[in-house]
Image (cartoon, rainbow, N blue to C red; front, side, top):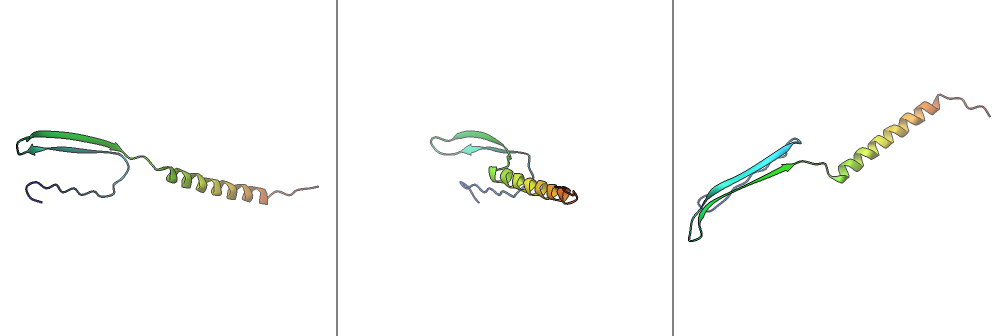
Length: 75
């Protein structure tokens, strides 16, 4: 960009805390200095937790079936 424009680029990153600091000078009749900051911490979405729980459930069922397959039942 040139004067009066803003360019932002974001790439997928690892989990953690992210910070965005913006400072500058505004021109014109209401111009002046400006400054702002945003802090964001990545948190998994509910769908991610549901998929994790479902996967652990499938693994648990598989292990349980494997453990029961070796037992002999006498009636």
